[in-house]
Each structure stands twice: as C-alpha cells, then as structure tokens.
Image (cartoon, rainbow, N blue to C red; front, side):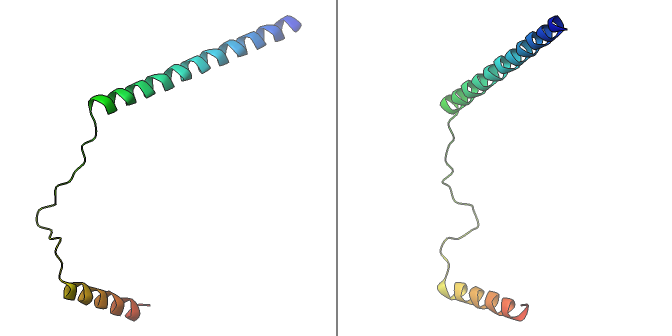
Length: 77
C-alpha cells in the first residue's frame, strides 16, 4: 500500500508541476504579445470632432432643456 501511495504522490506532483509550468509559459507569452502589440501598434488617440454635432450651444437652449427635464421629473415622480 505504501508503494501505491508513493506512486500516487509522485504522479500528483508531476501533474501539478506540468500544469504550473504550462501556466507560467502562458502568462509569459501573453505578456510578450502585449508588449509587442503596444510597441508596434500604439493606440492612436481620436481627436477629431463628430460631424454634425456642434460644440457651441446657446445658453438659452441649455436652460430650456433643463427646465423641460425638471418639469418632466416633477410631473412623473
């Protein structure tokens, strides 16, 4: 029975070692790919404006929208 337990424990540690080695290699490969992608394909910030949307909003329009939202919330609460 002792020989069977020893064999089982050896098999358990061998399996755990192989899984640990595989996961370590997987983490290293993912980190390497991430570094390569960030180096050769950097993220380009988008700074252009969306056509058709104006950034100049009249203050009276903002006030009218705010009043309408306030009235809606007051009525439906």
